[in-house]
Every structure is written in C-alpha cells, then in structure tokens.
Amino acid sequence: METKVKKQEKEFDTVQTFREIKEKISMELVGKSAAQIKEYLRENSLKFQVQ
Image 1: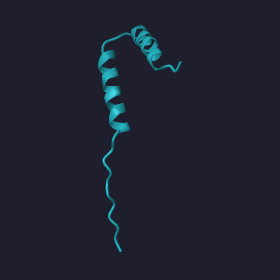
Image 2: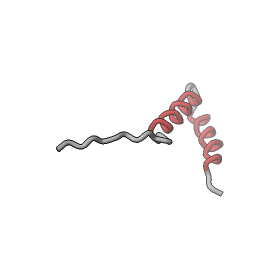
Image 3: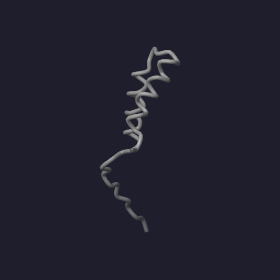
Image 4: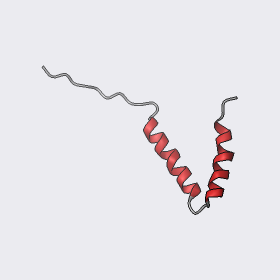
C-alpha cells in the first residue's frame, strides 16, 4: 500500500533565508581588507545581540 506525502507550503524557508543573507554579506565584503572585514563584523554583530 502506497501513501502519498503532501508537501506543506512553508511560511518561512530557513535555508533560502540564510542563503540570501550570506549572499548579501558576501557582496558587501568583496574587495575589503581583513581589517575592514573585522570592523564590518564588529559593527554589524551589535545589531543581533539580545538586550
């Protein structure tokens, strides 16, 4: 007996979202030096800290 599996429509696709975020960050860091990348990460990591 075969069972059919229905795919549910996802409200939030985690994999796709993180791919988009990763691509955005990559584009922002193109051509930057190591020091500039460290500064970028220091500045932007503050946005995600829980207070």
